Image (cartoon, rainbow, N blue to C red; front, side, top):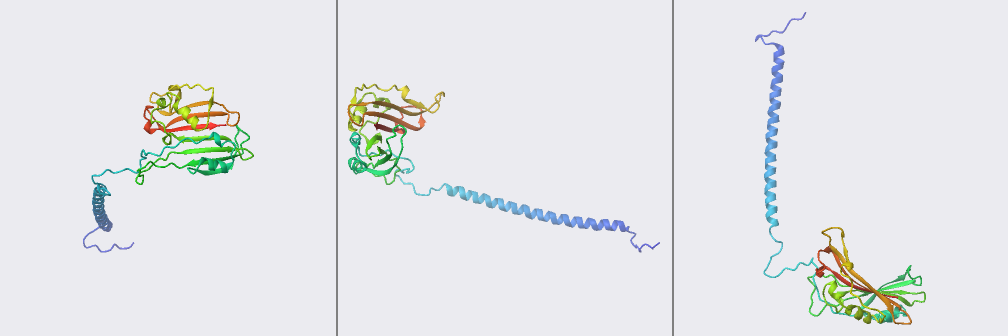
Length: 283
């Protein structure tokens, strides 16, 4: 049996190990506390920095990017109402029997040929080609649109040709802003036969035995949700049709007037939001 080491202070050696462990734990706790204090200080500093940066950003956002004077600022992102030179519906009936070059010449310099390609029409198997002519509108005198976004009105002629390259079918569409018709509601525009007769006359059409009847207002309206109490008017349209007093092509006509309100309106009187168009088909 080995002898125990000399212990002059009468200390248990097991207690000595406990004291060493306690000192190591205390030192570790001190290091952890110091690190926590440093970390908390860093968080506080970072938070103050972010707060000051946010205040700086908010203040800067209140400063307009340009100087606002006393003059009116135009929002060029909103389409403006612009006056265009009035035009007339071309003599569409006179295009029948012409070839592509003759049609181009007959329509005049205002129309440009934008497409000419092979085509098929299930309603008329004799159609083998189609040409599209687009009209470039002119601004009224003194109108400047350099700082304005304008929705340009369109006018187009779609001519269909047979195997001999001759016109046998015409489809025409035009924004009413380009024609000399009053800016009014759909009901007011078609309260009488003025638009219909002048449009057909300009297109070279003499109706045969046609009696004008103004369209039923409710029957002309299309709604976004017909069964809803909050339904909105999407479109107003009416189709007129008849025969032509002619022994040669064209022999039939169709004329459609449409007010398209886009995303819809609550009242048909809100014509400022409508794209108003006329469509004529001769065959």
